[in-house]
Length: 137
Image 1 (cartoon, rainbow, N blue to C red):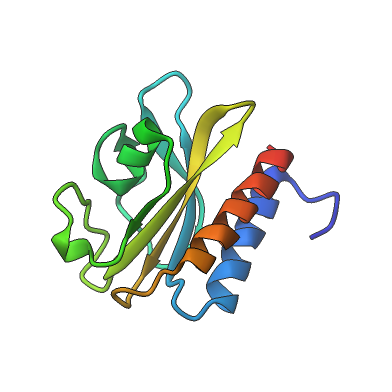
Image 2 (cartoon, rainbow, N blue to C red):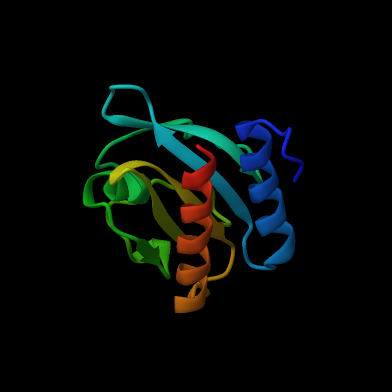
């Protein structure tokens, strides 16, 4: 990615790269805190369109991560009570928070059409990605 790229272009590039390089990353996107509101707003993403452009804190996996400040790995979304369905194809989801100066300002959200697919290595990779993203924000 060129240094002259905007933050948005860099984030889109990360989404595109992850989705193309990891076969089971079927939807990759970033959600960020929406100003002073207790909600997340969809930013850049790669994959099928989603109606979930605004997610209240506490709702769904992303909303829970906004409150817990912790990684959330769901190996089978059908077994999760507080889950916002993004489509019948989604079988598992991983959400990793992004911290800037100790504050949870957003997250990377990845959906897979395969159940039980995410590993500790995925979690470590995405934590690394989130640290790099924090540096460009």
